Amino acid sequence: MELYVLNDEEEICKRASEIIFGDIRRNPRIILGFATGSTMIPLYKRLVEISKKENISFSEVHTFNLDEYVGISANNKNSYRFYMEKNFFRKVHIPKENIHFLNGEAKSLINECSRYEKEIKKLGGIDIQILGIGTNCHIGFNEPGSSFKSRTRKVKLSRETRKANSKFFSSFNKVPKYALTMGISTIMNSKKIILLAFGKDKSEAVKKTLTEEISEKFPSTILRRHKNSIVIVDRNAASKLKWKIK
Ligand code: F6R
Image 1 (cartoon, protein in one colour):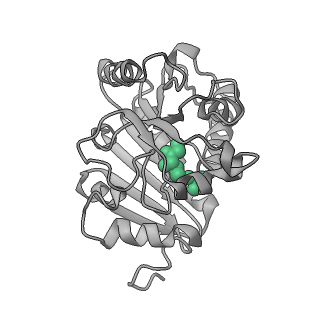
Image 2 (image 1 turned 180 degrees about the horizontal axis):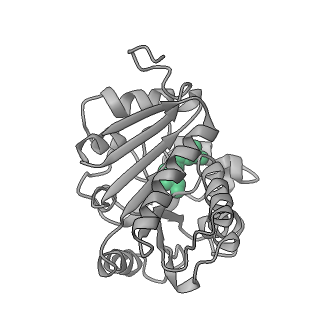
């Protein structure tokens, strides 16, 4: 695992976008795994800006998002699909058929999850998976206690996660109780993983990710077993790490 501690959100997004565009230049048919949430908003802004400025196309790129709420339609402004359309897909040139998403309204959620796994496999697996982190160390919607062997499935969201995500909803009660998420093992199969975190709120989760014993109690600790995982954080998110950062 590589760790970068940078000054602020802007530097984090710059570093992450350099890695992503570097890999797209080498392989324009790359498969990207995307996340949502507030951490990703400045990253998508940067990816859109640089792709326009440097004329980098997403026309051959395929994307798979990590997760989606259950029972919310793609047109609902709180769906992750809507978030991605608004912050990224509508602003770049990417063919609709290259965008892969979990459908939280599918008739059979079990079939939907296995369809997603098959699609990822058919395209040769995810090249770069981008992750944020929950204050309880969740990655995707793999809450504490999720099996390291888990694949894409329906999960119950913890109260802590629903509370954190209520910032996007009109009230806490409107936050769905269930979601579909790629599993830990699905995420770990990605060839490269980039986890981004900024702000003091994430400092405990960042500390646990890097220093706690690897266990299902803290899902993000598994990333230390990945041979190509990169953690990019700001000074605030790194503030609970013991060693002194200059
Ligand atoms: C969202 C996702 C979540 C978020 C995490 C952090 O697709 O997978 O794991 O990355 O909850 O969310 P923010 O960035 O809003 O703090």
